[in-house]
Length: 481
Image (cartoon, rainbow, N blue to C red):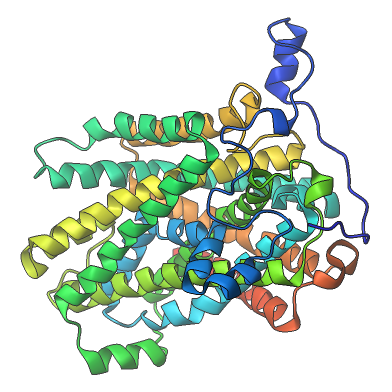
């Protein structure tokens, strides 16, 4: 990658806090290892298949056709898949069971907004060579950015607890409820922790890509229930809205689930990790991008968001076709949807829904914990990423463990997951609009982005998403009162 001359690199990295304390106590060496010296993988091959730094993803597409397209799919695909976590599946199931196909059009409506937001995050990371938290801290008041990051960390931890409970419930359902869900909580948390702390960067992302296949369970379920064609087409392309508390509430929940702040930080940090894994270990080496690389990132993001919305569409359509028509309007979680489908759509639909919960949870939980850690470490300016070892970057991994343990504690204490997700939706609703404003301003900043600023249409879509999320906060407060 070339280096943009629009803004000099800012060398503001600080020593790892835990290593600094250990160094003063004489436990570790005072000198902090450089990123190039502590890779968890081989340090050269990009985990998700993205071409090495300096090589164009667009060239790969032209050279290898469909296989080239698959090669450039990476952070965007995983971001889109992790968006359909068990809490999101529960939201979509609730929308379909309560309002039939009335919210189906939202899958189409939110699609371009999601692409614009995530593409802006990827664009900022590719141009600046640093994560979103670092870019925002350098440009905007620290108090504002720090407050947003604290709320994101809290929301992610709550969401981790809800998703751990959903994965445990899915495992219990597959045993015919002979094994209580509580027995799965600690093993699932240990599995996720082991994957993030011990496995190499390339293996982690390979696992993520395989886990995205679990989402096809919901697409397959769609073909089992045979939804009505004409009603489906009408609900897909003709918006439906009801001015009542319940409908406004579910629309707010859908927007909060599809455009979540943790995805902003994960997208940008994943792009930076991809560049590190391809050999660009310093910010100077990563700074600056090209139109071809931005085009490749746009393809990756678009495919990931398409995948996400296809799953959302399938779940609403399945639950609207089967559950709503049979009077199951009280669905609030993914596991309730799975249990309700069993007698109505057969055991195969039940198994697919349960497997989907497990797969998506195992994908979303590490994304939630890692994105929380990325946001905090980028704000404070110390090093750390999934491509580096816990021994070298203890504070980064300690943040991951804190988020995971917080979620596990929430599940063990049997805190109501529905109420927890309501709190998460409120936090996301509060924090998303200001972060989106900062992203929109940063993506159009000529001094930072040079000739690679976001286009007019893309930036307008980000502002539309910002306005809608802001209105969602107002609607959420109004409906709550």
